[in-house]
Amino acid sequence: MQIQTLTFTDGTTIEYKLSYKKIRNINLRIGIDGIINVSAPKGVPLTRIEKFLSEKQAFIFRAKSRAEKMKREERTYEVLPDKKVIYDKFFAILSENFPMFADYKIPFPSLKVRKMNSRWGSCNVVKKIVTLNSRLYLKEDYLIKYVVLHELSHLVYADHSKNFYAVLKSVMPDYKQAEKLLNK
Image (cartoon, rainbow, N blue to C red; front, top):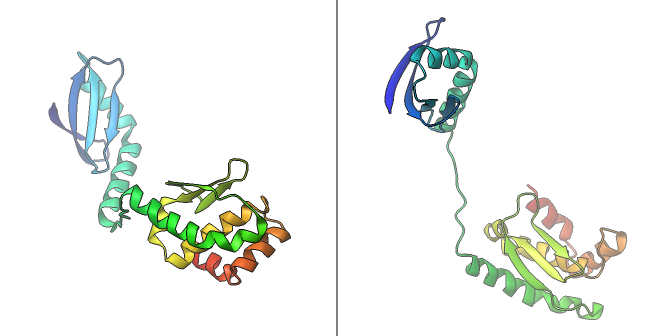
């Protein structure tokens, strides 16, 4: 691997790592750290690589700018405990609140926990499975309870009809407040 420097016609300069490999095309990769890596087929002259990079100049500077911005921004990461710890907490909340549905004669559902990108929970009415988003663990118990009650209500009414919301309101009269807090 060689460190190369290239000055573009506008006077801007980049430094990149060049490696020759058994490949067919010149490849350009810019890491999240802003480091430019170029792979080229063995035997390709440096002038051809520099021409390629000149054609990609706008892309290179956009990507480097993004990388710099990401470095400056403070990032926060959600640290979750072991999946069993999350499951046990969710199962306890599910078990504690299931008796509220005794009048509806629904079977006790299976519980699954997984990372979900666009929802807090889901309910498979046919298979009687409640799935909860593992990130819900980071929320207050009150909000976890809301999601559990919402999903259990789907075992009574599968849709979001007036009847569904009547069931949800009967087990959690302030569900609208919980819904607002959860979606903040």
